[in-house]
Length: 496
Ligand SMILES: Cc1cc2nc3c(=O)[nH]c(=O)nc-3n(C[C@H](O)[C@H](O)[C@H](O)COP(=O)(O)OP(=O)(O)OC[C@H]3O[C@@H](n4cnc5c(N)ncnc54)[C@H](O)[C@@H]3O)c2cc1C
Image 1 (cartoon, rainbow, N blue to C red):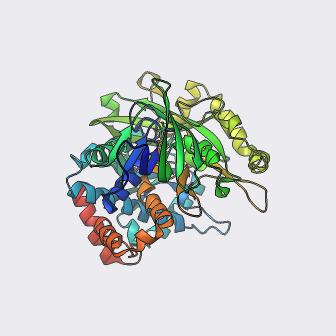
Image 2: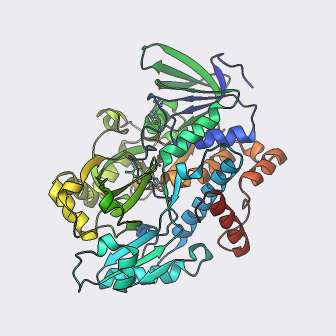
Image 3: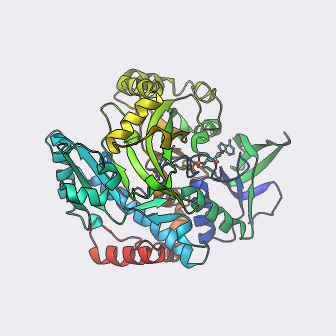
């Protein structure tokens, strides 16, 4: 363990969002003697993508998101990704359950609330797809409890606001799973950061911009940090660095110049929501209802009408409407994208520009939409929507991953990816989907990759089994284990 305030730390985390907070808490649980420093550019934690109004707060478990179950050309529905995401969310719930049981969080209701998850489609083609998706998913015990209906009376019960003023002859169908969730990832991050500050050997420092990082001859990393309030700079040396800087991770990864970083680029997609706080309307919708994405749109632009629970108050969000900006962070600079173009990634970036014209067209269409056009989209979900009840809000930035592809030269990827040095001394998290919901599994993978010996040690394995009772098991195959773990998590997280 290194000495506090010595300009050295065992572990340094850049960014105080959900990813750094999750990883820092996990590592500190596994080895409380580690000295930890979290460096955050802004004045508080969870102020970028992890802020509750910058993301949709969906506890992604593939219960309602149609893009996780693609339809193949032969008409079959592939549920492999949905199974993975569902199990990853169960992993997150195990970790949060552990922390609640240890008394580290006040109340689970401060960050997670039960909200049914629905998929909603219109027209024969999409109804046929939804039915097949339902039949495929309900072969797995993970999706137990999912219901399907085309019956209008049932639909009125499930989503009264969306059924009001809807043409009687419109063909519609929906699935519903009652055990869905709304997660305030901002409150969760704040809980995690607070828990960290209670432990010895931990510092969280705000208004700290990491501007550069270098490898020293002894293999440690030296970070240059600017205090954004005073303009002063300092350096900090660390054995391990996590670049959990959200959209700011790519430029820092490029500065590290590890060979594994070469070829990566970023494609920023901004977002907007329509938000309604009118209690009379909000009280008529108790669900997250996901529809089908329009042709050419990126997967994360699937439209949805959501109940949100933030600071104990309910609101409705509809969107997201995508947009284009060259900023990598909501509070970033327009130079972020141009500055990220390097000799080692220009090939992949040009290939992606060449091969993604439908996406570009889609984004341009989204950017030039008027408020009334956005309301018209909302009316596809909620026909009676009135202009005066809704306002436009800016969502967070997502920087999608661009990487080398041997066939096409470059590819655009919509998931998340850990990029780490071969010796595990530095790792960055790129991308943003499914994002915060799967932060715990992503960080478990990172620990396996960057701390392989400690991960295998008896001490860490014993502690990991306490945090993750299903570790090593297979929740999709072992129904007894699934029921036991899920029912315990739901009890502790008050999701029943
Ligand atoms: C529109 C939208 C909707 C989404 N919906 C969902 C959803 O429904 N469910 C879900 O699970 N996920 C969702 N996500 C994804 C989720 O929000 C992100 O995956 C998650 O918040 C990323 O967390 P993070 O810690 O990596 O980044 P962030 O929360 O962005 O944190 C990064 C931090 O790093 C700081 N930083 C940046 N550069 C530096 C630097 N140089 N020095 C110091 N600090 C720096 C930033 O200020 C920031 O505080 C959504 C995202 C968006 C944008």
